[in-house]
Amino acid sequence: IDAEVAGMVYASIEHSTVFGAKLKSYDKTATMKVAGVEQVLEVERVFGIYKATGVAVIAKNYWAALKGRKALKVDWDLGENVNFNSNTYTQSLRDLAKNEGIVDANVGDFDKAFGEASKKVEAFYETPFVAHAPMEAMNCTAHWKENNTLEIWTSTQVPSEVMRDIPNRFGLKTDDVKLNTAFSGGGFGRRLSIDFIIEAVSLAQMLKKPVKMIWTREDDTQLGPFRPPTFSALKGGISSDGKLSAFQHKVISPTISSFLNPNYDKKAVDRNMTEGISHQAYEIPNMKNLFVFSEIHVPMFWWRSVTSSTLAFSHECFIDELAHAAGKDPMEFRLEMLTKDSDTKRVLQKLKEVSHWDTPLPKGKGRGVAKYDFFAGLGGQVIEVTKLSDNSVKIDKVYAVIDLGTVVNPDNVKAQVEGAVVMGITAA
Image (spheres, rainbow, N blue to C red):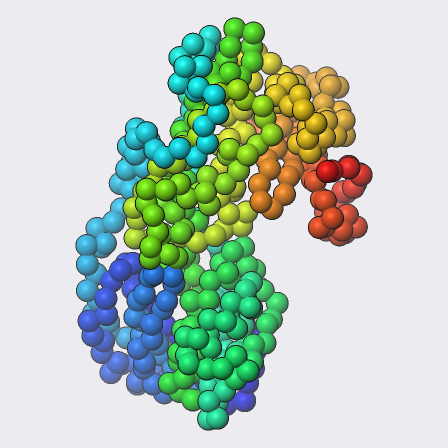
């Protein structure tokens, strides 16, 4: 956002906050009276299969661009999505949980084992839409030069995609595009998309001068794309000897892929949305995991740790519920399901050791444990808490064991986490 180019103008874009709305017309009379405003242009936002036209105010400085934008009178055809209500949509996800769904993984005979279980446990977990909220709102500076070359200054998590997509989209050769990749200003998955870069380049092509396009914080929060709301319906059966005999994790959610791929197959499991649930190392004899797809028009995209940010929460909390039903210590309940050698077993054993799990705690204090294994790695945590007089909980300590493999330098962990003690753990 600090990029400065000689002769640069600024752009602020008015988008409809109803997804799918179409621009009917706009009145720029009041906007053009704002000191510093130079032009008003239509510009298209492209995100996967989603396309929408906005109105950009071009000015000599950002304040004038923003003030001019606020003076615009825009007439939108809001369409049927104007009646969308997130509470109603949330209820529709709950209702979809009644559907059987598409099988993600099937081991043994879940239905039979669950039916014969001595104890049956069911739970439903809900996680909401979430905005990325990076420190720096979306912005990009672009200069389409007179010799039909392009220079870009921006923050992106995918410079290779920028250098592939932008030349193709705008009819340029790769050698005619120069990308200056700045510090990210916060990515968290939001800057995997280049929709805001396409907007800036489109404006630069029209203006033939450097233009800095800046989204407001309100734009960033309202326009997405968002992490999908992901609901989990879980079932577990405990046998007479206190072991987990049956397990089911059913994921109910819209999908990111349906926005990125016009040929998305709604009858197939989107494994981006069932990430990790069927690949944990727990040895469960009967498991049937499922996926139920939900339609939505709101743009969805990757959010830090992707779908594991929702599924690890529900999956491991439910393992705790099952341990409670079995009358067992949550750490031991997990380790009992790990008879074979695995990285997961080593992580939990090391976690048990470093957290002094077997050491009794004073009254009013407690411990919890969770672990998860997904595309980005394997990690586990133990948390120590104190219950306060008002029934709130204070976090005392957090112990974490991470399978770093050969990817992360342990010294960096020590440098970034105050009080961290990095201990060796051998992983396959």
